[in-house]
Length: 281
Image (tube, rainbow, N blue to C red; front, top):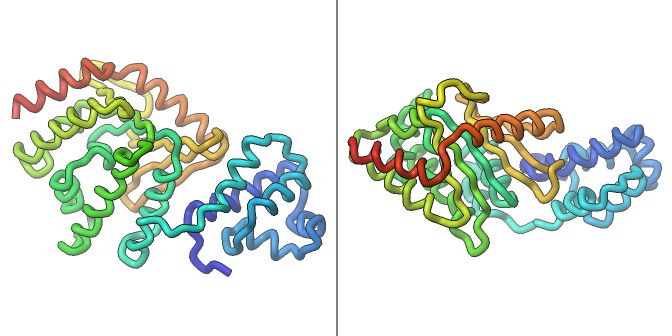
């Protein structure tokens, strides 16, 4: 029995609970269909107990779920038993940060829109270090270095053999925030330009001239799963990451991102603006 399930294990349980509730069955009734007790179903849905891919398919059959793509995507979530690189930080960093790395690792597409910060996946080590120095309450020097190394390791999703497609919308305000001073800021902007040249990365910029825009008060990170039902929204808050996966929430943030991307400068003009800002430093 697990005492500290990961975010992915919790999500697997959540999706099975959604299927059961759509079928109008209680946990007790679901257990009876399997010849098991209610606690068995409850433990699976809470992420405390593991479940095989075949058992997932059996449950989906009992729940009259005919969405084969969804069932197979949920079943695939049971097969990744190998410890990810992020587990080495299990006793060092908050669990929500590890869950974020796990979400990114399994994503088939990533999108983000951010107003006053450079997205973590596009930060240089020096820029990241300066942002962590501003965290409240203050982090110790070792804790800062742990977070910097973790953030940089997260970026492997953009450099692996099959890199995840990534779309980032950054506001001009974030480009002009000089974390660490002009030298670090200039190097960060040059890094953005270099990353924007990669085929799987689309970088757009919301200039000041665009005025108001939907979602202006939020930093949104959207991870697409193998099927839309398994997408995840991550909101970066001062107290830590918040993950959303309800259907209505996913739909809302998809619309917000689409509208923000529509208002943003296209990649070529975005690069021109970044280059001009870098020259001013």
